[in-house]
Structures are given as structure tokens and as C-alpha cells.
Image 1: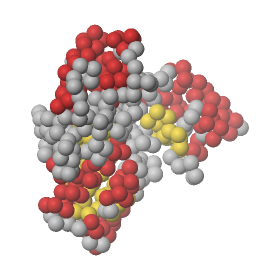
Image 2 (image 1 turned 30 degrees about the vertical axis):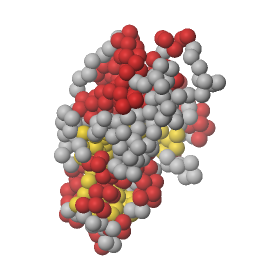
Image 3 (image 1 turned 180 degrees about the horizontal axis):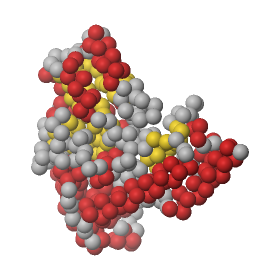
Length: 412
């Protein structure tokens, strides 16, 4: 994977050049557009905006409605649309191994919408192409999958099918998968959406597609595979020697990737990607006044979100980003080695920066002191550490010192 690192000056110039290609309310006789021009009582021009490209895009408020990899989109904001297209190219082609121009996608308000978008797209495909009824479509996923999969199935009226995982290794239990597939088929499910995770929220666990799909194929002919890489998408492809959940795997048809997690971009920066032309199945033909039509759940959305992700990726370049990920992995390795020496039970995928500590190994007081998130606040079994860039060596050492003291007290 490779994308160029750009200087601050080049990034700034690229963003302002893009804004210059957008429609300008101050110079054009705009009568027909009801939105995008922000209230001038609150959002007026500040001198420092000339040196602040992202804030300038926020103030200019371009609307990125539509899917610009599929159609031209609204012509009023063509400049910043191109930055979104370039961002999608980096995510799809450089990071997730999609063939050149062999994908569609957009910057969504977040990973939750992107996951819903996938189920919506596949549900519509099955209904339109296979004449499937709602009661014949199911979505299957591990119990560690993000809760958005439940939201989607509830909204879309399709059957959610949850598969158990091993407590210690967080791997899908194949016997339970086999049982759930048989049960779904017996209940009349004929069409399946397979939801796999590249970095689950609590554990950072990564689903293996091979064994999962071998069983799926025994029971179902018609299925699509979606990968939720909301957390793992900006780390796992850089840290793992082999990524079976990219578009290089012909079984994978769509992927969600979030910017506001590993990329540390503002909220509103989820990315939905799918193989070319599948997005046609969520076109809204009734949106006839939208130039290029609309293919998204959200409709209108801020172009500033796409620009923020593009700016971050250009600031690092692929080499810089890979180096930063290596640093986080090394820091997580350090934490896990120390936990091993203390004798603390935990789970961690070796290519991820999430460490889930067994609740029996740590007091609630210590977990609260360091803001460790629980898997379930009603009956917690695990508390997770996420080694992000703000998690310094000193912070880890402080946590380990407190944990050692606590362990010694318990053993006395």
C-alpha cells in the first residue's frame, strides 16, 4: 500500500483550491439552494480561517450528498467532492486491496450507518433479484459484533442470528454456527448476510472468514459478506502479515471503516465501501431533484468530514502511518508482556491494540481510575485497555504499578 505524504502547505493549498471550485454564495446569484450557507450571525468570516483549511470547509459547509464514485453528484461542490473521491481511493485501493475503480462508497456519519447501509443494500438485492420475502432474509454474526448489526436487522425487518464465541479466545464456535445455520434454514431463511468483524469493540478480535464461510456454503447458496472494520480498518491491514478480510478476498463484498477511532478524525467520518455497482440497490429514485441521485441512508452530509480524513492521511503518508501503527503495536506488546509476568488473564489479538482484562483480575476501583471500559456494565466480565497515541509509556507503567500492588495485596 502506498500513498504520498504531503507537506502542510501542499495540503492547505489543495483544500483551498477545492473550495475555490465549489459554488461561492458571495459571488454567485444563487436562488435555488435552501441550505449550506451558514447563519452569518453565528458563523461569520474570521481572519484566521485563511490559515485553517478544515475550519474553512466547515464554514463553507459543502453538501456531499450522493455517491461520487458512482455518479457526478451535486455540481455545486465538485471541488471538495474530488477530495472525498481521493480519500475513498486510498481506503479502498491502498488499504483494503480493492481493484482500481472497482468499488463504490461514501463518507457516512459513522460506522453504525455504514453497517446499516450494507444490510439495506443486500436486503434490497435479495428482494429485487431473488424475489425474497423479508422472512426469508437473515444476518448472521458473532456475539462480539457491534450492536449496530441489531439496529440494522430491526430497522430492515430481517432475522438476526447470533453465534457464540469461545470465552478465552473469542473465536466463533463452529458447532454453534452449524446449529444456527441449520435452525435458520429450517425456519425458512434462504438468503443470508454474513457480518464479520475486523477488530471487535471490546476485544479487538478478528473473525476468520474461511472456516465461517465453509459452513455457510453447506446450507446457503445465496449470501453476501460484509466486514465491519470500523475499529480495525486503520490498524489491522498495517499490522497483520495477512489480511483475509480485504477486497482481495473475492468473498468480501463490502467493508465499513471508521475515521473517528484509529484515525482520530472528527465524528461523522465513517466510510462505507462496496464492490462496484452493488450500491445501485439502495438508490432512491424519488430523490429526482438531487443531481446524480442519492444512494445513502443519511442523504445530505458535510463535506468537511471527508476533507478531515483526507488531510490526516496526507499528513502521514502510508509510511508515516505504518510507522505510527508499529509504535502502538510495540506499546501494546509491552503491556501484554508485563501482564504475563504479573500473571494477569487477558485476551488480545496480537495484531491489535486492544487488551481485554478478565474482571476477576482487576478491582472495579482500579478499572474506574484508568477509565477501563466494561463489556457489560450490568454483569461485567472484561475491562478493556485501548492503546491509542495518547496512551504513553508512563501511563502504562503507572497502571502496571497499581495493578501489581493490587495483585500483591490479594495474594497476601
